[in-house]
Image (cartoon, rainbow, N blue to C red):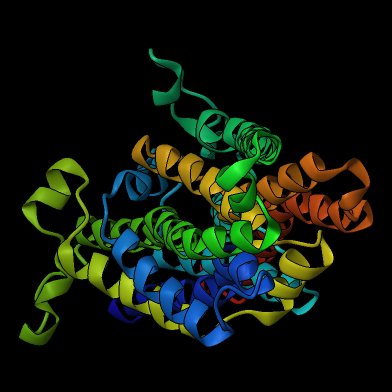
Length: 375
C-alpha cells in the first residue's frame, strides 16, 4: 500500500510537470507573439513567477482536497487517485498534441469526478454537486466551485479585455487629437515602446496568477492522498527517511498544506514551464488574433486580475479559459472580424469536452483496475 501512496505522489508530480509545459503557453503566448520577449526570456520569466505564485496561499488546494468528492460515499484510495490523475494526464497530452489550449484544471477535476464515480459503482452521490453558503462564493461542490466559474470567469475575461482595450483606444485617440507633445506620444512607435515595457510586468503577473491557481490543485491531490493513507494506517511505522510523508498535526486538523508539498509542486511546475509548449503558443499568440504589445498587455492584465481574485477565494478557475477569452475581448475591441472564429470554435469544444473526457478516461481506468483485481 505504501508503494501505491508513493505512486500517487509521483504521478501527481508528473501531472504538475505536464501542467507546467501545457499551460505555460497561456501565460507567455502574448508576450512572445508581440516579440517583447524572446521565447527563452519569456519561459524564464514564466518559470520564476509560476514558482512565486505557487507559494502564495492554499485556498484552491483545500477546495480540491475536500470540496468536490464526498468521502463518506467513496474512499479516495491511492488507486482511485492514480486513475484520476491518469485521466487528466491523457487528456492534457491529447489537447497539447493538437495545439488546443484546454484547461489542466478542469482535466484534473474531471478525472477526480470520473474516478470517484467509477469507484463508487456509479453512485452519483459520490460527487458533491452543490452546497450553498452565504455569501454565495463560499459555496462548495461542483456547481459553485467549478461549473459556475467555468462559465462566468471567461465571460468576465472577455468583457474586461474588451473594456480595457476600449479604454486604451479612447485614451490614445484623445491624445492624438490634443496636438502637441501628447499627440507625439500617441504615435505607434511610442505606444509600442511603452506597452512593450509594460507587457513584461503584465506577463509576470500572468505567470504569478497561473502558479497561484494551478500549482495548488496538485498540492490538494497529494495532501488528500497522504491524509487518506494516514487514516488507513498505511503511513504507520515508516522508515526515518520517509517520515516527511506523515501529514502534520496542522494539516490533519485544519486542512493546511505541508510546506514540503508546496515547494515540491512549485518547483516541478516551474521545471515543466521551462520546457515550454510551442503548439499552444502558436494557437493563442498567432492563429487567434494578430497582437501588438498594447493588446497583449491589456489581455494579460485582464486575465491575471480575474485569476488572482478567484485564487484568493479558493475557486479553481482555468488559466486557459481566462487568457483566451481576454485575448478574444481585446481582439473584438479592435474589430469583430479580427478574431479567427473557427479557431475559437475548436477551443470552445475542447473546453466543453475536457471534464467529461478526462472523467471518462478515469472511469474506464477504474473499471480496468477492478477487472484486474487491483481495486
